[in-house]
Image (cartoon, rainbow, N blue to C red):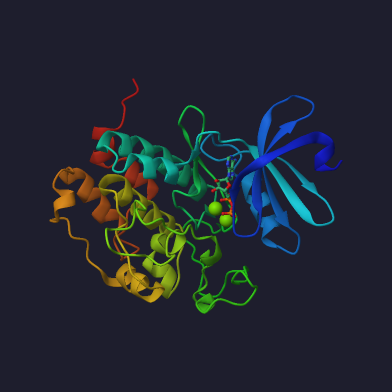
Length: 310
Ligand code: ADP
Ligand code: MG
Ligand code: MG
């Protein structure tokens, strides 16, 4: 069957690096889905499909419903997340309360822990890839960069099987660093973008690079790279700005590799010591010392600020 035989295609839900995501509705059941269409010649689609199937056992992972192939494209029919992207909610909301941050972060950590237990590193944790259901529950999406790395193993620089190409198909300058930075997929920040401090322009630098763990820039990395990225997100939730910024990619990477967070600054005054303690344990450049998803989940901040279910 062709996808048009089984689904009525609707409007665009989002645009990605290689393809687009559309609303679609099953002709048989009338149920709505999201369809990610990826042009052929994109070898990573097989990996993306395989990993989504491998991770289908968790409510926090976007479910892959079916896959179609035609002459030009692959079509991934996925569960529809009608609540949109976390990034858009963050833009509206500004800073989140600790209670709300902790509840979101707990759900994110549960799904990251599941991925890691299943031997998968997501490698692209950021609020553009965290979607929301109609009832506001988070779903981790976009396994286009995910890799199977068993717990404790590492990916080496340049070992990735992905070709790191820019939008015109040329290799990226930092390809040798072994991490695909979605430069052509970056949301261009609006003048009052939530992550951009007043008077400072990120000149198109948003999205992935700000979330990259320092070890990804310099050498071997594994599961803990996702924890770092989640920590960057937690910082943004709690204080409304990204922790590491720069007006060039090099300046941003330099900040990621060496800038110390200033917890004495005014924006931190209203945030609990427990939250700061957790963030310090996550945004630790020493990978061995950085805490795991499991340890994040049992940190006192989590215990104190998340809803108790008895
Ligand atoms: P890319 O790998 O190109 O970044 P994504 O899988 O992240 O592609 O999808 C791009 C965008 O499409 C997302 O940021 C989101 O806005 C939208 N989208 C993706 N999957 C879904 C879904 N299951 N439900 C609703 N919207 C989605
Ligand atoms: Mg994406
Ligand atoms: Mg992707």
